[in-house]
Image (cartoon, rainbow, N blue to C red; front, side, top):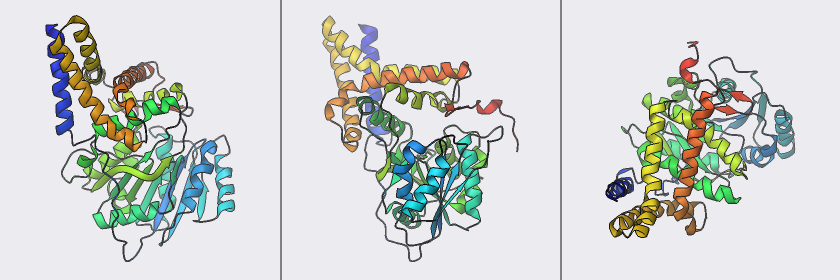
Length: 391
């Protein structure tokens, strides 16, 4: 029991540090402020990269076209080689719903060294620049916006002096697997990139949520967006790092009225969402993979094991250490469950969900080494250091 006791003590110490020393990542009160309206509303262009999104476009695009924005705004949907009629459906929805002007364009297949999404974003930004916008809203085709979303984003950016304002869209949580996995996905993301640190000047932490990013056009040019991150699979974090690295002030928080409409009804769907990019998050490093697996085991799996083994073996110290670590873990997860309107009894199940994420991460590495990593809608991307630099 000696080894298990010290391991359980290490797990509890890790959780106490996470509770108090990791930017209060577990709190869910970092929300878009309600600032005063600017005297003059700047022009904005909305860029929507879309590849085979016909299934969700009817639930998302009309919300963009219906934005109640006092200034000049228009939408550019960039059809990234869709085979399901995405572009035609977008034009039909624009004719049916009206609202903001919509341009549908297609850039063709991305050249070597570019991900399809960023190639589409590049094309959309190029079209938008001809309109002279002060801000660009980069948003995914599966994101639905409340009518005042654009207005609030711009007001927050203007009042706060932010070069980038991003909201983590509220993901769909309907099926049983979504309830188990999705809130934990956002919880783990916030643990890696505490939102308070993201918004702090001088802090190195930089991240964004790709579904909703308002970007000052001048900051995008200064940071060479998207050319500087053209091969990034986790493009939102890479974008935020580029902007912050160029001296930009950024903000990231949870959304109240920006929602993803993409369903992930089965475990297979959620598994693919995580596995396609988890190893890229670890920079394709076996050493980082080993450290991540060890960290997940220590932090998430040791507490329930220590409680059960300690109780069964009559070692009260081990059981108490495991129970205490598990209690802190569950307590930090409760705010995220409340944000997603889920029952609190899901909190003690976090070790099981973490075990799933551990397996997804290992599977992501296996896929990469089998040449199947970072795959999305028919495309598989090489690791960045295997791509020739095109300047």
